[in-house]
Length: 429
Figure 1 (tube, one colour):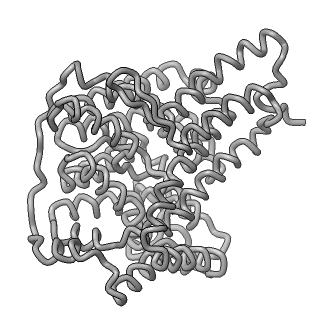
Figure 2 (figure 1 turned 180 degrees about the vertical axis):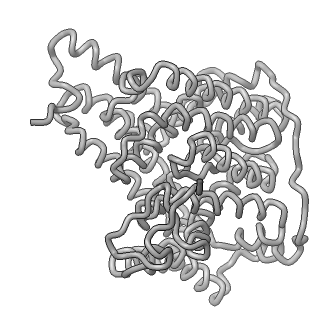
């Protein structure tokens, strides 16, 4: 039995057509959509290892293999690309300042991945009721929105560094998305990246050091593999990020469900197991921790193509690029401003998907529990609230996730017991 059925004739799409997760277009067209996913994830996935001292090519390799593993474990039902998680940058750097080497950092990543797998097994064993208790729509929508908005400073910073290239990219993505027809508007992200990249090349705005790296890079190279070493002194720096990964994986499934109109609650356990295994794999061989990427959700929202075949193409592309320093260096010449312009659209779309989850569930935003907890958590994550607990620095995304996933349900039960709450979601008439 084929993994995907061909949508229509595989070459043309009506303006209102939606390509489902189990469908694909012709392979040349599918490769084009895969390239959009590859371009969307590449910047952050290569940035994380650069900031943490882990090998870039190894992270790229394991993100691709981890994505393929995720698609297999979720039985091809949840389209996703698993790239390097930015949430790990600050804790990993803090652990390095405490004397931890690469092997010890990888040991901590491995432990986090195993804990996420354990959570996934629990969700799968205990069923949807556990999920509904831990992540009702009011919480899931907030997590999705938090993920999109927490990355906004990253987009704005990149936009400011090269505003013209960013504006050209942003304008192209918006115009093609809004005014394009047929297959053309589905390629809006790739069109925007190519337009901004082309402008940068023509005006010599590509960073000279990146051009030098491109010139000197060999065509073929083997990614460096590192054996992890679990040190108990490093694990506390990273263990709180388990909540972040769990929240982001669940939020991803909820976002895809909202976009496609499908109930994917039965796939949440598989998504957590697949995501946890991908992070475990990364930690076991030298890569940064992986997580489902908001950039790629944005690509799906913009194109309305949810085919897992496109994600598979992106994963295969990442694996191939990891063995070619020349091509990795070529993609790395895409200016930071171009990525800032593209992600400004994609992160905004993701935040609105969270609002859509709230709207469809009838979440009551006048409820005092919702107002206080969700509002505080969103501001903490967006503002990058970073506090120190001893030697451990906890970032805003962690605080936001803890507030949304753990504190909100507790206060909801207390408020309901006291009769002071008006309910998390309104009952449908």
